[in-house]
Image (cartoon, rainbow, N blue to C red):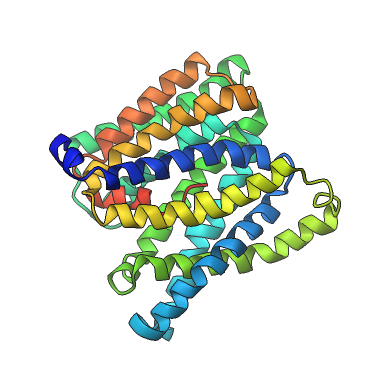
Length: 314
């Protein structure tokens, strides 16, 4: 990897930049949710993303890959799980828990993917993968449950938020399973653009309800809130997606996999001063279990690294 990195460093830098954006996004999204209702933020996010990616979808429709009617239900269902359920649960969870918890629990996507492939798709799995799954879930129990059970360190609200983050990861993996046939037919930009459109449509009515309940939130939006909306929509959704697709066409997936481990550290560095969050001993122990678990669970499972690198971060 070292020689390859020296010969062609740009894809590695781009991939690092993508994960840096996603790590920063967890903190910025948390700050933005103090001012913007969850469903309103998600509607605006996918409205902007859809408007930017729509030309790619239309060009593909006309010149490259006409979407067949028989694939539309599967495309819709993929969008519902990968975008609607994932983001609705993930951002709702983020509004209840800490950015640091959300970041480390986000690593569960590749771990759950391995489990899904083993149970549902009957894929081959190694003993080290099973050890990794056990470690990963042990870490989750330590982070989510033990502090609440034994010391009441966590509030029930934060526990619920953590659980929602994990369930949002499960929705991503289900969406990936649904899209396996589609990725053999259509390029990633087509599936993603279509999914963004599904998200925009799905979050419209909830956003209207948000406005009906609190019509003042727009008038009270500060420059920080506007910046947060733009960062979540433009940088964490559109730019990071386009960059990661470009990079993954040039880097082996197993090598690209190492970059997602930098996210929790960057998020923590920002969340402690900006959000006043802290690192408990139980969180550090649980995080070590999760990181080791994800690493071991995905050894030799390059396909599951691909799941993680799709643009489904909260």
